[in-house]
Amino acid sequence: MVYAAEEDPLCYPGTTVLRNQLNIKNQAELDEFELALFLTRADEEMPAGDLDYQHYKAIHHHLFQDIYEWAGAVRTIRIGKGGNWFCYPEYIDQEMRRIFRELAAADRLSKLGIEDFAVQVSHVLAEINAVHPFREGNGRTQLTFLAMLMENGGFPFNADMLDRERVLHAMIESFAGDEAPLARLITDIASR
Ligand SMILES: Nc1ncnc2c1ncn2[C@@H]1O[C@H](COP(=O)(O)OP(=O)(O)OP(=O)(O)O)[C@@H](O)[C@H]1O
Image (cartoon, rainbow, N blue to C red; front, side, top):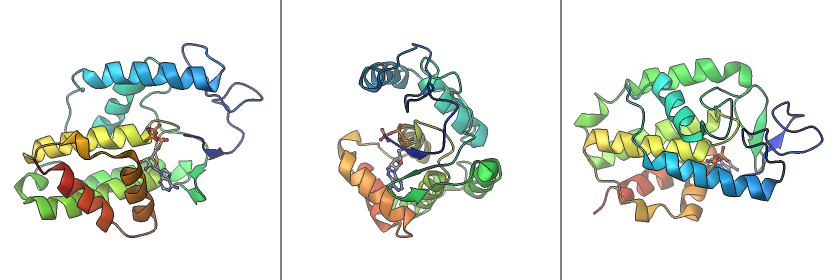
């Protein structure tokens, strides 16, 4: 996805193409390789962890390790999308620590029914999206993490419900303060 960003040291000079381990300087070509490499990693077992901030970064690292040297590391420049600016980089760490402290790992969530689970988890995802810790790959890390939370909570993960437009709409609504569409999406994902 194209970001509004400041002059970005992570890009090849004079371009908006992110420096990558494949040294591809053409965006369309990079998109293609990035997707293929991501899908291969997404198919593998995710790193083990406690569903905490450390774990979240490890998941991003796992998914994007073949493409970006900074996989698993938080961004250092300001970025936004569609007129929404995400968390300033200097506050990412403290915000992510707060969010994951509030999530208090999976223990509390694993005791909830789907409706309450969806409300709690939609809030967590909305907050993580508003922070947008990584320079790229936030959406895919969010959904991977959601699948792990749902598995941990004992809910099925029906990936057929992941309509791209619906996910995008729900995330944008959540940024504007309405988390209900995201909660409904999570409930639907859990339906068999
Ligand atoms: N205008 C917006 N306001 C808030 N969130 C947005 C906006 N546009 C997109 N998003 C969310 O940002 C995330 C995408 O972030 P990013 O592009 O870093 O991830 P990605 O994995 O590379 O891309 P994608 O999720 O599109 O495959 C998604 O969760 C998406 O719903």
